[in-house]
Image (cartoon, rainbow, N blue to C red):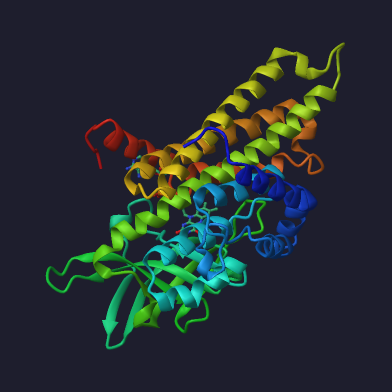
Length: 385
Ligand SMILES: Cc1cc2nc3c(=O)[nH]c(=O)nc-3n(C[C@H](O)[C@H](O)[C@H](O)COP(=O)(O)OP(=O)(O)OC[C@H]3O[C@@H](n4cnc5c(N)ncnc54)[C@H](O)[C@@H]3O)c2cc1C
């Protein structure tokens, strides 16, 4: 791993930044407030090869990895228009299908995921299980050539714009009777699948849904990978999710930091610009450091993941997700303070990010569950739950 990005990745960064700047935060907020998606940006990014940059070339992708996809999300975030579905559609679903799908499943889904015409969302969270995924109760029963899925999911992002949902369910082991996790692709128009929007206090074009699966029948090949390797397959998708959550946070953190720095250089209420006061300059400098550190850990996680080290990537991806969320929350709060009253206006476009940045401390895995992971796996401390 080099600390200097390749020329190709620097070019990708610059090109995505240019695209993001042509849409910007005003577009993002306007779409969110009108109940619309960022479709124009999504499809233009797809046409330029960014949405499927991590997917295999033989299925229309760019042949890159998480290092490339995280650059795309970070740079769009840094322009104030992050595309949340890059986390679920391209990173989780695209990765899981590329790595564990059959040739037919890859042929069926990957070209559409790569060219952006198909969006697939991801459903693991359940109302009762919450952070405890061992308690998932969505069950898949085999019935001849089909699977029948029953259960409930919550907070599933982007269902309204998706063709399918990658559902984490459980199947019964024929020998032991134990329930094991397994991944199923369920079309959003499958009979028995109902979705209801959850009202959220967030300014984001991607909305959240509850899903009810009431004896949803899907064909045998809706199962991705094998019922016996569900857990490692699931984690192969969750590490990219965490790397992308870090990219999201680093991107929006950079956006807020740039805005606040620019403002602090201009705004003068005494004899010097407010940026000359250490009360303003130091928190901004601290944010700069924290964002850079989070980004470095994100790059390490992406490097480990792309080189096939799932175990090594797990710790780094968790740490990157934690660091990114904490850095962006603090940065956006700092930026609001640096702008004074303007920090809370719609015009200056900072406070519109407060909610989104805050989400990243809760989702896709909460700060506390990351601390639990590091305490147990990184430090060898005993588990309390
Ligand atoms: C905007 C948004 C989008 C989302 N999108 C998706 C999506 O697309 N797909 C999807 O599947 N899910 C999605 N989620 C769900 C998200 O992943 C969960 O909200 C998250 O994993 C936390 O689960 P929970 O809300 O059930 O909280 P709970 O598990 O109920 O936890 C509540 C609090 O208790 C703490 N806690 C729980 N257990 C422990 C413990 N052992 N030790 C210490 N603290 C603990 C948690 O850290 C948290 O602070 C989304 C959530 C949001 C807010």
